[in-house]
Image 1: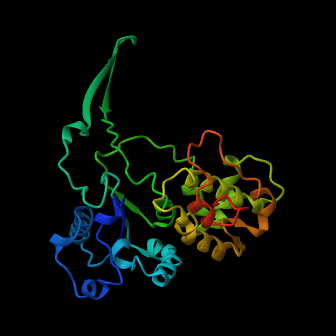
Image 2 (image 1 turned 180 degrees about the vertical axis):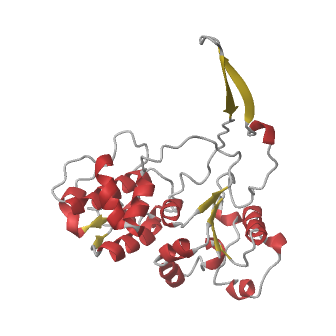
Image 3 (image 1 turned 90 degrees about the vertical axis):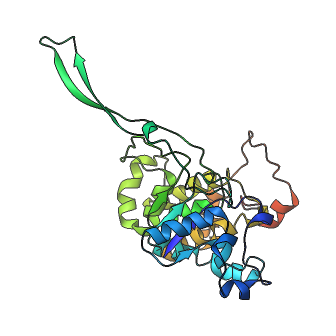
Length: 289
C-alpha cells in the first residue's frame, strides 16, 4: 500500500470518516466525492500499480477517541511499512490537488560549452545549467507531518515546482539522524558524534540530543488543536521507546530527565504558551505544556 502526507486545510471542508458515516464509507464512495488532493494521490497510486492507499482522514474515525488512540499508537508501522509516501507539498489543502501543469523549460537542463580564455591554448568544456524552482511547501510546517517524515520508508514529493539542488550527503539533519536512531541505531552511534559535539557523559546520551533537536524543530510547527501536541509525535515516541527500551514521560525521557527538564520557551516565539489548550496538552513540567 501507499500512504499520503498532506495538509487538510479547513477541517470543516475536509472529507473525514466519522462515527456517523463509517458504515457508508466502508461501502465505498464515488471518486467525485473525494477532495482533489486525495483524488490525485489515488490516481498516482493506481498509476504506480498499487491497489491500496492509506489516507488518515478516511482510515481513522476522526470523532472516535478510542479509534484515534489506537491508530495513532501504530502510525510508525503504517508509514514504515508503506511502499512509499506521497508527499503533497504543493497542495495548499485537501481540495487544491497537486497534479498541475508545469513548464518543463523552467527545469530542463541546458547543455552549453564554456571556453576558458585565460588558458593558452583556450580550453573548452561541456557544462550543464540546471534550473532551480522553489515552490511553497505547504506541509513542512504541519506538526503532524514531522513523524511522517521521520518514519516513512521512502517519499515521492509533489511540489508546486520541482526542487533541484545539490545536497551534502555527508551531513544529516535532525529528521534523517532520528530515522537512523530508529531504524539503524548501531550505525547512528558511529556517525552521530561528529555532528553533535556537545559534551556528553555517555555515548548512549547521543540519541537524547537528537530527540531534543527534533523537539525544537517540532515545537516551531503548527497544530490546529494544541491538545494534540503529544499525540502528533506519539508514533515517534512509541518507536523510540520500543527500539531503545527507554521510558517515555510526556515528551521527555526518564533516562535523561534532568537535562531534559531544562527546556525553555524562546523569547522570540510570538505564540502564547499560557493558553488553556496548551495547559491541557501535558503536565506543566513538560515542554508540551
